[in-house]
Length: 424
Ligand code: MN
Image (cartoon, rainbow, N blue to C red):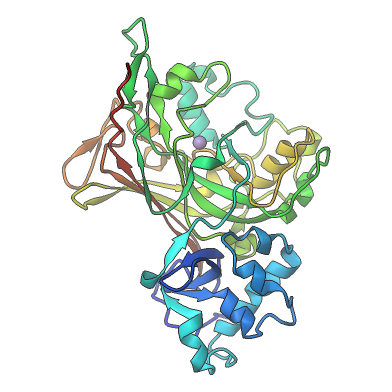
């Protein structure tokens, strides 16, 4: 049966009644509060809580909602957060009168999206980036190593990852300065300093850890879902020329820690449940027992990337899908904790660039232009090898099954010219 709301929701909205994501907002009166979104409205959860709508679930939700971050709310546990989400969904149903009829509450509870600012929803303690798309890892291996042995020997045995930095994760929309750094041009014998010439995006998704662990504790792969609160879109901005020069032997450093962008709404795993499908990849060879997942599924989320130039022209440059990940979120989390590494509520774990098998499904400029050798054409006639100053990169993502549509909104950031630096 289709669910209908008494709130007017635009057709194809990412924020249907099936979604009910969580975020943090501010406006002229409110410094910060937890909210959800339906259509083009945000719903103030503190006000809903004060009006008593969650009293039978948890009487103390108001303080979790009058908060700069969602961490306190998430720490209540899924048995509470999923009931809250269900309750909000019920309150918004056409046939439910309890909020609908209390018109005096509407102006406090329901706010048009254009009148609020959506803030970074999480206090992110730690951030890890995986490398879990086989098509992406294969493309990179072909470009930089051996086309016949594109994947390194460990790749099909463990979800490769590195520790990133949470200090530079920003919420969409934002802008950031093009990074300066060391690069070594191929024909030079010494490194040079200056703005990166090869600024790239990476199309990724990320999941939010919803339950903390102690040192020494592992998360069994078949219980890992309980530890995942929800997901966001993620752009792991990368400076390819800095990366090439710095990355050996310890991996990415300054090439990736200047800025990453997340979409502002945390879409819960409950909302994404209908979109788990049969796995896109068979895992051969079979991974070690701690990574063998019963009932392993792929998550079918359509992903798109657009470049918007300074004059406002927008071009769709990539159409991929989250299902092209080889390793699942559960396997990533099981692997991350198998050595006893503790994880905390609010930690973010990104997927790695998600490329599909076809060239228009490649999730980075590096692949789309094949290292800059095949520039892409924008709809205003300009060409791009990599991302230029003034460009805005927008990632969109949504899952759809019949009438059920659940989306993430936009993950968007604009590149500012590098700061000019002077040294004595
Ligand atoms: Mn990445």
